[in-house]
Length: 246
Ligand SMILES: [Zn+2]
Ligand SMILES: [Zn+2]
View: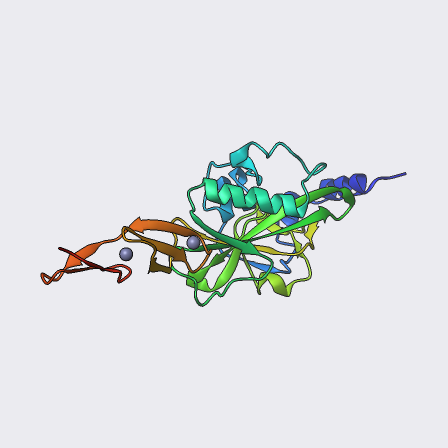
């Protein structure tokens, strides 16, 4: 019996490469945002989403906690990938993180915030092989960018949630190629920033005020910053707490 692979090889041998390379496949879900560069061989969707470009390799969720020793054949569950991703984001120095299955408000995104999303799926022809894919919101173009493995970065034509599945189609050195994997899981969104933003400060005791992050709910404490009015009253410029001074 002649294998599919054999048929494909015969096809390639019968055609010269310039014809094969002639962008036969048209991207279905995304649009090119740049031309090919050999650097794009060097990193994958997760490195791209985390803003770790050339030379950072093929990162998998869990890489900061040594939990990334897996392959397509023993891919962690979606919920485990989500936890690994959250840990990586925190370990990369992001104090503020929220994640969940609903996308966050794109119009309220602050300039120091990053928004990425994750989906899990399978190879079309071998369901024993699972995979993950990430996308990253790009505020300047109000669109989502992503980089399937060896592809150039692409711009998703619509919103991540508007597709019942994503595929890993891409563009390599010889033009566009059809994907071999689809991602149809629930989408998880991760919103993060190096510091807590949009904080509210309220008096806690005579020396501290409580700081609550309005984005992630994290609570921490800071010393009051008193100034004095010269009439025996001091007040904190941050939270308004007042003290009497003898
Ligand atoms: Zn926060
Ligand atoms: Zn205070």
